[in-house]
Length: 105
Image 1 (cartoon, rainbow, N blue to C red):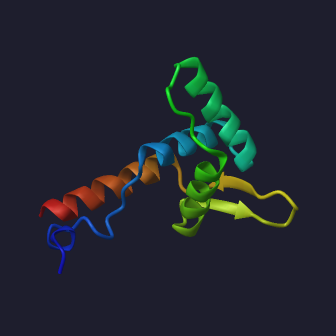
Image 2: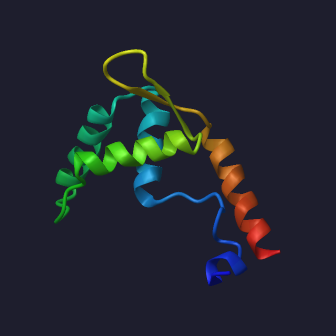
Image 3: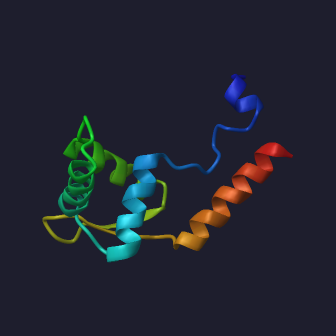
């Protein structure tokens, strides 16, 4: 058993900074493609003079992972995949609080 498993981190509901950024974009716009989400992220990074820009493939794989985890829904009926939030901001917050609480107790 790894240390992470012993303290309950593995399997906990957590989100990376990029995942939170993507979710915030989708909660605001309701439905997006990877391209449009990537363009919003790049615009923010360019505005803030980030030294390194997030690659398109990173956004694509992150959105795919969020879909696999059930946090986003992916509509694959068109040539372009469209993503919508599967969980509300409140549901994500509740899941994160529950995961932290369970890991601590």
